[in-house]
Length: 88
Image (cartoon, rainbow, N blue to C red):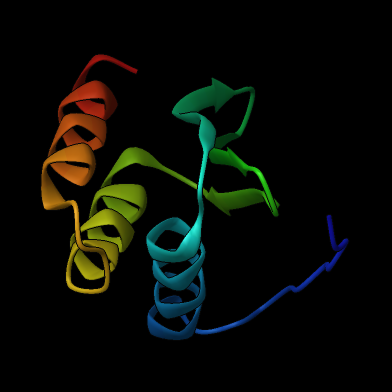
C-alpha cells in the first residue's frame, strides 16, 4: 500500500484519482462517509490504497460525489453514498 498525502487539489482531479482507485481495485474493504466535528470525511480502503477525502460541509461533499460519479464504473455505489450523506 502506498502512502500519499495531497492537499488543495482541485475537486475534479481528486475525483479522477479516487475513481481510478475504485475502478482498479480487486477488493473494496471500506467506502463510507463520516461526519467529524467540523468536516465531512469520505473513507475508502481497498487492497491497494487507503484514501480520506475531506470537505467542509454536506453540500460540498455532495458536489464532489456528483463529480466522482462521472469517473467510476459502479455508479450505484456513489448514489448510495449520496443517500448516506443525507443522513449524516
